[in-house]
Length: 356
View 1 (cartoon, rainbow, N blue to C red):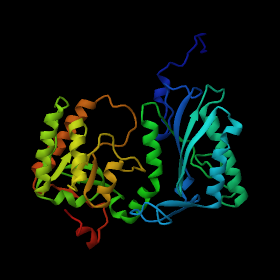
View 2 (view 1 turned 135 degrees about the vertical axis):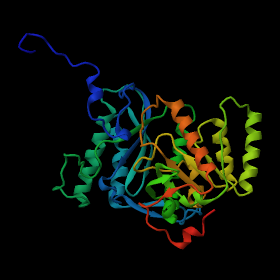
View 3 (view 1 turned 180 degrees about the vertical axis):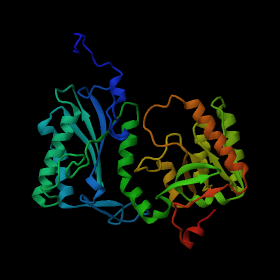
View 4 (view 1 turned 30 degrees about the vertical axis):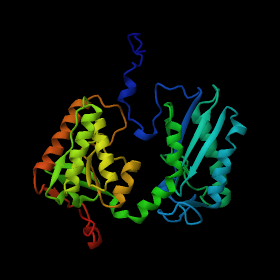
């Protein structure tokens, strides 16, 4: 109330003027986190320290001791134990899956019925238990701060993904089972999974990951398919672009429409190089989609992001798609696009040998 006796109530818009949390750690405002739901939870060790275990095996082996797996540390074993004990404290919560990586975890939780506690209370209880175990094992020091942006053992906050669509749970479980293999692939070919910083392609600054030497290929062709194409027309387009790729062309596309996505998948399966322009940018810990992973490790993929990373719904989707298609056309029209790679350290000759 001011001196004139007038109340100034906060409007609903004031929350949008406050500083946002990291995009990957905000809660969904439309979701009731007390209700029956299935969630995939992701939490990372502070500073990405590999405290939970060591990656072992080889990416091309599927069975036996050499198959990709994480050899859990004593702390990793305690983390697994704490996760499985969540129902003792919250009977409505059923752990479905836990994937422990050296520096982070993914876990799937099923809230079987409405509960009094918010999901965040469940997660914080798990964090408290694992933090206590880490202190007892000497993995962290009690002198470490527990505030000011530090979480002591875990990064502050967590990411949740709500699994609501048919088949989504099974896809996520398969993704988690494959996590150790993907990490080994990245470590076996670090040059193609390291974010390259900002490079300027044809006058446009972009974040990049992958084989930047694909831009040097003099023959590049844009893949652009209308959403109105029939299945038969998409197959015709696929045949056309695969022939071009097999003749030495690099395919370039935002891979947005169903036709573009199908052509990109078929091209990668045929080991045809691809340059992809992203709609939403590269997050700090960006991982290529499963369909891109093998191609990235073979030097057959370059990911370009002309926009900064964001995790919100796009309200300018049409204009952004048109812009990305325009950029793809420009990259393809120039036989030798202008590339400023000054922020990038020189790569060794072995990478040049993988140039397509």
